Image 1 (cartoon, rainbow, N blue to C red):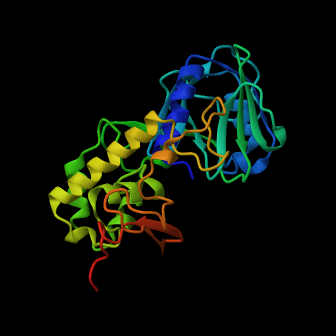
Image 2 (cartoon, helix red, strand yellow):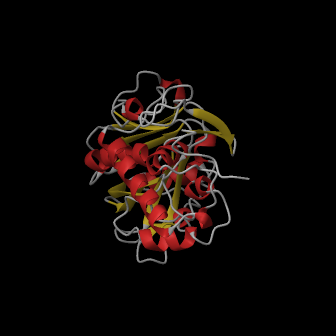
Length: 302
């Protein structure tokens, strides 16, 4: 599943190419791609037609396009809700799921195109999703309690370490009261968002902390160090276009990231630790896998 760096790479590409453009056509090719939009495909397409894309947003792994009103007052389907005027606060939330892609321009393999849109400059925007776990939905923007406007389904998600408003010390305070494994807390999007399995393992390796240790047992300086490592590793991944293990994660131009070549922990079981030389291990964790060094990151005593 795409994590923060991969989603941010996509957001930046969409911001660069879509901001200021108007949607002139929309077609839903698979109903599952709009299942989160309760009013259905007809409502979503009618409300997007003529909408102006004013910008993009992201919170953790959640991505959205902010929308303004239509430039021209064309006919609207019966029973649909009119799109808010500019500044009125609506967003097209894009769930990438496990394999979702937002691609610009021609698509070479069209069998997995779930939603297709056309912009006023002739650019084709396609939502491609092989597994169809992702999709689009329209929703209003609401206050998140910290001064920001975010889509309603995202309001409960905590800020991520790359967010300018991220309060590291506040998150440390939360973690100090958690009687739960530190890796479990790093993956909890209501505590800190954007950190998935890959970057949790990388951050824990850099901090020399085993993911099975209880969050409340870690010192405040160690927790702060861990969160700093999480921010650093995601910035480095972002600079390299994210992490791509297969063709399912690509940017808006269909290009893969290459941070997987720089991973120190994830996927390296059976290989020597790059820090101490011990053989890296893999263990099951929350229907996932955890990768760690048994020497640098010893498991907590029972």
